Length: 121
Image 1 (spheres, rainbow, N blue to C red):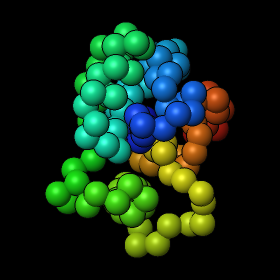
Image 2: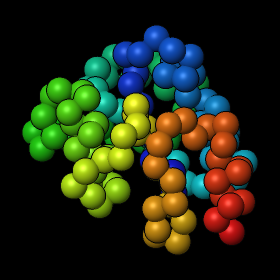
Image 3: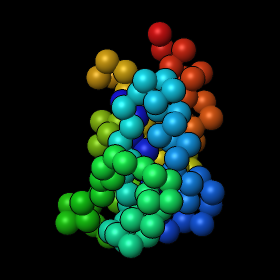
C-alpha cells in the first residue's frame, strides 16, 4: 500500500500531473491512496479530471490535524511512522507499506518505487 500526500495547489509538475502515480502503482501492483492536504475541491476536481484519475481522493481531516499545512503534515507523518519525533528530512509525502509494515517514508517515491519494493522482497 502506498500513501501519497498531495498538494493540489502546488504548481510543480509532480503536484499537477497525478497520472504517473496511478500508472506506477498499477505497474507494480501496489494499492495507491492519494491524500490531499487541502479541501480545495475545485482544484482537486480539475486535476483528477485532467489525469482521468478514477479513484477516490482522501483529504487530511483539518478538525483533527488543524489547518496549518506544514504542522498537520508533520503530525500526520508522525502518526503514520508511529513516532514522537521525525528524523530530519525536508518532507514526508510518501509512505509505502508491505505486509502491513512501513518500509519507506520520505520524498519522493515515484521514481524509486521499484527499487524500494525490490529491496524489501
